[in-house]
Length: 155
Picture (cartoon, helix red, strand yellow):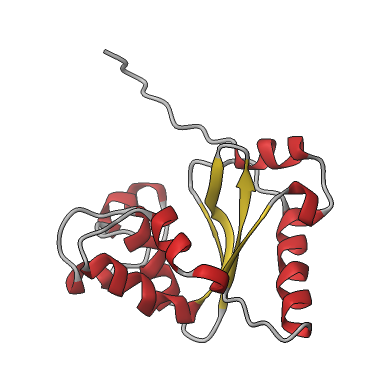
């Protein structure tokens, strides 16, 4: 998702325009991108991964899906699950149901933009799980959640 799909044409990448940008003009944000991605896939479950995280872990994604399924069998109906690290949560190696788009848009309409704040406000609708709940070593989470953000021209 992007509010400027033409920026990616030189690389041959297909990008969907950001429908949320027309509803909520202003600076783009990660939450706006999340909402736009969910709007593009109505009725579906979506795995959202940040573009700067080059080591996604398919097994962890599967474990997140199993976590959701176990909760449903116990009579709960979470609409998402993201990963937790000692420093906080990572909202972009996560599974969300498209029905959360409306909640994200309402949150954005209040002028707030922080994805983690939105997740916290969703309560039990979005589970936050760590290595222990997923049955993996913490270093696996560290690896798949590492990002490659850097400034090539530091001042």
